[in-house]
Length: 274
Image 1 (cartoon, rainbow, N blue to C red):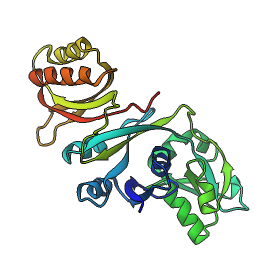
Image 2 (tube, one colour):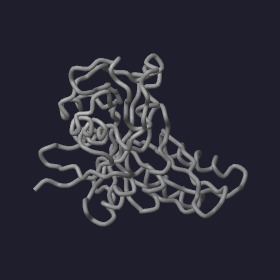
Image 3 (spheres, rainbow, N blue to C red):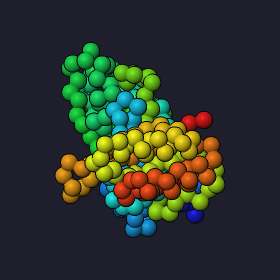
Image 4 (cartoon, rainbow, N blue to C red):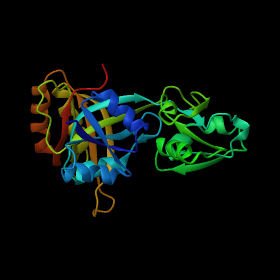
């Protein structure tokens, strides 16, 4: 029996593409969720053991609400994957660009293809919940004059024609996906970690944390502030660090626990970058 893994969106979406690159398709089945809240609930309630979740984009930055969901539900990051983002414009066969009146896709996809559509002002852009869902609806209802932005390879799933390839503004565009679950990663082959902590409003408090990381040979690859709910204008920090030996991180985290507030290890995993 194939294991269910939750994704936001449907088959053909970027989340589904990330899932197939992370796991053997013959062994897993996508549990399609309309929202990230639904995705997290599926893990928390035990409908599935794991979920694949977008966490940041190289152009648009961090998806802070998703970090909040992970933290609030005490989930653990157990893996990560970087997916190159490319967008193809698809529609029912027999049409050209001039025939399109609307193009539907996820808000982020439309934003990332703004330059292309600035040269086709006759097309009305409409936001949808997902990249693949509009393509599925176009195919199911045989909608003429309507296009969709989908990841490469998705047109074939819905028997649509590709009208334009790689219409994104920037070809150097990646989204980082993480695998989240309730249990921490038991693998010994880890070289990256995500932690969260708060700091006292004291001069040099953050510098102490950064110096501690340096002293234990941790490489800081990301630092992100995130609002603390119900504590107005207070922020926590989310930090990604990489290391060559797990003991380096363990010792550093022990020291950080003495100089920060509410430190939490959000996950230890193997870096998705070789």
